[in-house]
Length: 346
Image 1 (tube, rainbow, N blue to C red):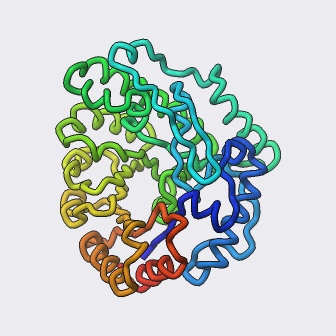
Image 2: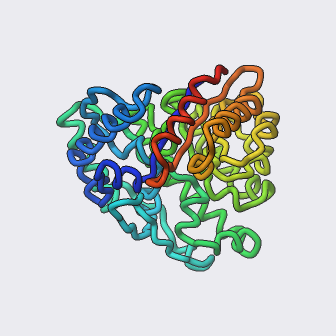
């Protein structure tokens, strides 16, 4: 069975001294140097389980597949970004209302100062290394809308549906434009959403539907399913990342997505119910990093085995990952998880 782990920036900062200031995201050489250190550190700690690399070489990275850090699309739409040494870039919500969003225009990547920074990195990497690996978090349509509107978007679904539909369409237009730029460089684009996808379905375009946990299936199907379908039609081999704890409540909507091939199921979700709704889809089951902190080895093994029984289906299309492991989790706990995954056939 395929499995993976991803650590929170606080873990990297505390244990390896990696700083996630703007330099990490805007300076290719600094980021590549950190990436080498990070992959070597993973090997030294967890190499026995196939994690990390013994002698890593520089990778011409745009973004990173060792974090889950979504911010670029929201910054392109005008949101300020705050950088911290021990955290992912934080988007500052603009808290726009339904009247203000009507004035928002789709950013032109040809003239955007934000995109110019990305374009500069791409040009540098192409000139020096001849290729670019793109692991920028692809974000998701409602995630970006909430960065612009905050909770106002949830009220706008009821009180200004036409206005919010127009905003969602604009966000999708931008997302497709950015995705097409990344696809010019590589077909392996989704590692910045969840790293395990690179092991099981590297050509999948994976959208981040974190905030879909907050709405009903009816709202998803009316407002977001059409936009996710546009993404699927644009890129094919489409996936949804749903890190919320009750993915089953929108599984009917996800099942209607033409081209869906992959779904990431949040820890706490009814994995068996999701599998029933998505019988032929590759699932990645998330193991809670909070549970990992204090659980015994036997408890971790039992939970991993339960995930496998619930999610594998007839075709065995299942992987397991633990994402967001923070600085307070001992290596021993991580090893319990990795060992349990390694021992589980699918």
